[in-house]
Length: 386
Image (cartoon, rainbow, N blue to C red; front, side, top):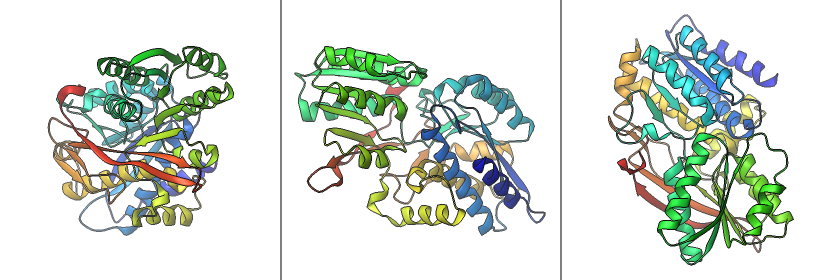
């Protein structure tokens, strides 16, 4: 209810007779099992757009943001996409599970409208050679993330090691962990177990028990946060105490403080808010002023999506047609002001970014704080992930 009220206020503030409006539609998992990974991103986008509209300016149109909840369900995403197209959306933003992608993409293709994955995992189709309508600003993507994680396992464990793997039974998560399995084997590692866990699982102990029974030296999980953390905590309840490597979703920073486990490693592409950068302060200030119900340190993905939308409209100028927007997005560079290790940069055949930067964090027990284990390292984006 609170989110709906905030949304209503946002749409009212975006509307003014003095300016034309560019409609941006959003389908996101605002409620449901995966909401903790997606709703804060949508809130970050909403706050950024609200702030952008208030700043105004004659060089571009204002944004009318239409936000729909799909609960991570494909059928609801299909309904949302149709409604957003009918409402005149010139970009559809996806912030939900990969199971919702197909109907959104299908509807966008029928209307030749670009889809921006923002908070949603970047699908293969945004990599070279990218599909014309699909773009992604989200930090995480299945194969490069898994490559970086397995390379880190090699650093800390070598190749003569036993690896356990975990994923959620949704397309992109399973694809990411399948890639990790093949890549680890290629490096000479012994993948002893791989558990694919249903999205609606309430008890993770059976899955953790199967992983533990194979006696892995390290476990890597690439899935929505709820899947990752419950797998980890179930293993700890079984007294498995070795290194667990997982993706740094929006919840990760707060969860590291809650769990305080020195062997929980977080790999991510975003800076964390404990670093207290100027951009972090800006997000905190906006969230505080709006009385947001979400923690500001979970809003970076939405903020980056907002920066991207603003840069597109700045380049397009007034009378932002779908054709102009799509053409602009084919060649776009967005300064994310320190939220990542480098810019978002789209080219006609690459709708992800030219370079992906990673960092790895953990909880330092002696200092009682989060520390950087491995600073920025990068992978140039090529057609190999496609």
